[in-house]
Length: 137
Image 1 (cartoon, rainbow, N blue to C red):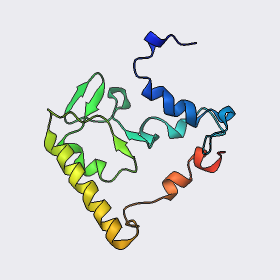
Image 2 (image 1 turned 120 degrees about the vertical axis):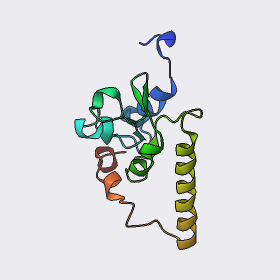
Image 3 (image 1 turned 135 degrees about the horizontal axis):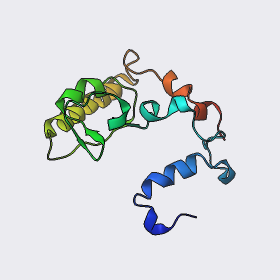
Image 4 (image 1 turned 30 degrees about the horizontal axis):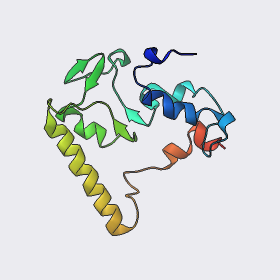
């Protein structure tokens, strides 16, 4: 059992514990654990993060081995299938976060007006083909 003082970010344990614990019988929980190697690191779609050891270029800066997104990353972030991005800093190139926020709200507004998502820029099959999407409770 992990000691409470060892867990520094309990929120990072909660959702994986729920998602990968089929014994809890929670709707949507994955029947296969752990995730396939092809679905981790950059292929983990919940959060886009460039770690220093990924061998990718970080045009901005690293803080504790994580690349801090800036304006150089905006175009990339607008085209990856990840749900969120890690880890913007309010005091470092805040215009990048503003650009992403404006892009997000433009997309949401367009979806509300059209009643659907933009099929040319969003492919739901990327999510549907994930192991837990195919094999879950």
